[in-house]
Length: 355
Image (tube, rainbow, N blue to C red; front, top):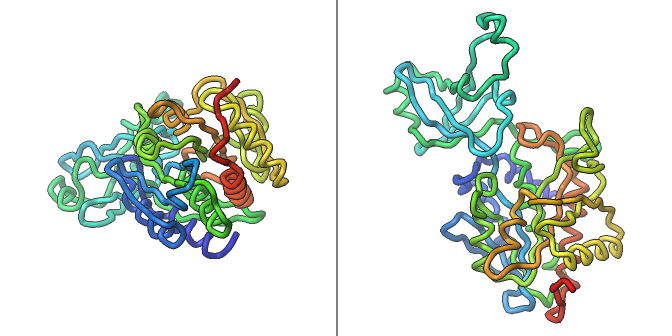
């Protein structure tokens, strides 16, 4: 991976931006997009878009959500301890003892997640699963007034930690789900900028996927762009670690290339074009079944407006929804290459109606 791309990836992963509060990572994304795209825009839903060849045809949408899971302050007690709720799906065991940073109005506020020490737990309590209601955030406040001088109810927070590169091209970070998708679609645009392009290609960093009940930013951005075809980039569970059940989600490995979904929201013609493109470009890939919903932005985009021919490309990810998710950098490069090659081959005459 080129140094400029890797530096951008680290900046994007490190900045806090849980669902509904994506401003900081969206700003980083748009700053990088301005170096690549013809035009860069933002909308009221929090989506960011970068466009190449806006007058071209057909319109292709490449989407990756830029939000991450997080926490939100819901109460400050008399002693200055902060109760919180979760933004997105958490395993509450992961939260115990973690450091956090609260995105407060006056600037970041550090804190730690507190829990009753094991020495003080009764025997029957030690065998129980920790709930979010058993936890609190301690920012070192002496009182409610002291705490409220720095934070307020509704402030978001994320677990702290910077992106870390391990041997064999492995990258570890929080927010990989799914800053990685937002990164890949912009990297695809970077590749496309070097070649002549017939289509109009819109790379979109969508908002609020982790909490989207009605499609979030994916639906609003797709309705605005009106693409003839869309490819969503998200993460999927790697099953190459101890305890993983391949019978549940398939044989998915870090370094195995992008994962292409079949079924559910995926248009079968788009899928076959992705498969054929991967094989032409000698990009390894894995097929994955999606018998119901995909749990990604693809579900919202496929049903936006009058319907969009949609594909889903996923990056294998270990330890999802934790502060130490893990991906292989080679998979990111291969996914960007696949998207760029797909966009180059689509013509205005391409028919996406299944027959």
